Image (tube, rainbow, N blue to C red; front, side):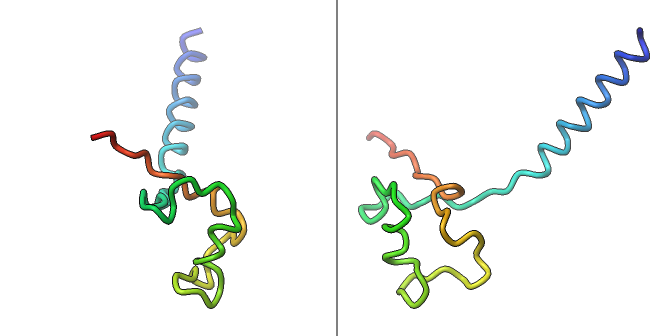
Length: 78
């Protein structure tokens, strides 16, 4: 019984460690007038599509799932 408990704690520790080191940090959307309320990928592509002023880098993956990684910043109430 004691060895099973130790094994379970070890497995949970390993899983916790792997979870902690596997997370990627993505930049949030700026909390400016251009980005507030953006909920559609088409709105992102107006400025960030190829050939636009703020185009994504060619190696930026995935190209059509902006809102999956880049979340809206929470506005601070003054």
